Amino acid sequence: MPDGAVDPAGRVDWLRNEVRRHDDAYYGSDAPTIPDADYDDLVRELRTLEAEHPDLITPDSPTQTPGAARHATPFSPVTHRVR
Image (cartoon, rainbow, N blue to C red; front, side):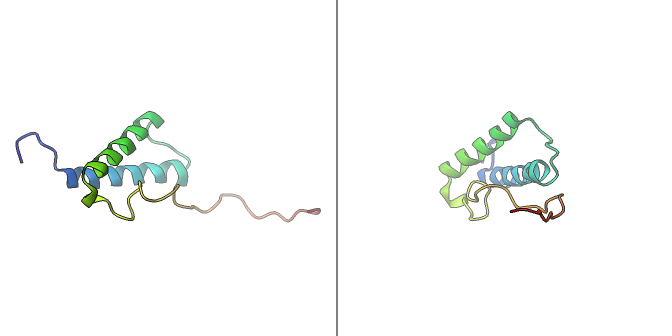
């Protein structure tokens, strides 16, 4: 690989980890760590690399799973008097 060239597999792994980390901060902790536009750029780059290198697509990639992971709700159950 020429100097300065990016290893697609390594970049895809890094992007997946970053997207997951930001998903957890945003959806799990309700504490985003980067602006939405920056997050969108990460996802866009990941989608582009996976399109260019379909052999790097995995079933657990953030591009292949709908939505974010489900987290416990911070609210207690409530019983209503009337349905």
